[in-house]
Length: 158
Length: 311
Picture 1 (cartoon, helix red, strand yellow):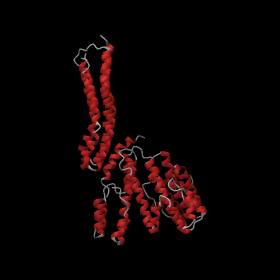
Picture 2: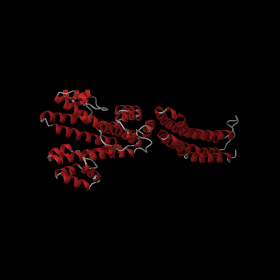
Picture 3: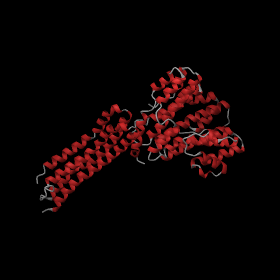
Picture 4: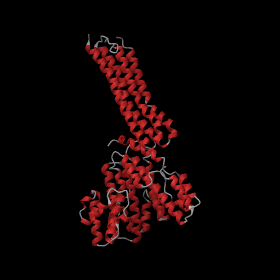
């Protein structure tokens, strides 16, 4: 059994969950700070700012999904790990990189956009939807990265 | 400090901004038929925070670091220094003239002037306090000591803004200084003050050079105005030609216009400073409005005197 291949694949799965998770945590945290600021002045705006706070959380979910797909494909989740060559392991690691890297940066960027959009909700609550759209635009790139990661994982033959 | 560390404070300030008076609120207040109606309307429209002390307390509570914001209070600090110095020399109660919010307590200023130990004052005030006290007691020239303190306040604002490297505060300090310098130069030219006095009274800034203003003021009032017309402050000259009150309004308006530049910022200390300036303008408007209504000033004049609103 080539343990190096398997180790590389597991590192890939870990990276997907880790970096995308960090991006989301930072993003959600930043929006949370803004949201808390608004709610401290006007508690009625809680539900509106909560939607914005959730937006940067998706990158972490995409990372988790990618991670599960890799772990399932290499048999870790089923309890019987597949024998992987080093090249295959590197392929899984490479497959994890798009969502890991894009997830990290887009989570932070979306957090900034959503925190700024909290300002719209704070001042003009009737335009809350516009703030959500502005912040959601960043999501597109995280989805693209997720798509690439999934396509690569599905096309690695084990 | 990272700008995003102000995320919570900025969001809270944005929420509070929705409580600022709008143009239609002001029009309604001006249009009220009786003084009592104006008062009732004002009570209903003016939202918390209602005083500058409350504004400062709120901003302090939200801001993770208020060092840059403290620059906004420098003028109050130095006003209090002037007030305590004068009260002390004339045997009056300084508390009656003390304005808040301020970075320096009345007790600290009193203590410093009484003991002549200025270490209890912030570094930006020490030298001015010592020198002003010396001038006021030695020469009894209250005008000179006042001018010296005013100049020191402006210089301290600019110096601190530069030290923090905050572009918003640097511009705020420069604009405030330029307006104050024009006012000083204008008054000095009217009173034909000598160069020696001007050097102590005019501060100078990146907006208007000190030496330029001194020379212009020494050339007489018309000379000063015509030389200022050639600068970016030609609008200020038009206002000065109309009336000093119009010039005062113009000065307040350009500061609010500057504050508006921070309105689009989602992070950083700038929206907090802008809110402070906005609230100050709002409360000043209400003060002018109430005084005008009490004096029976006509509505057009009141409208003319209203400062620019932030919202």
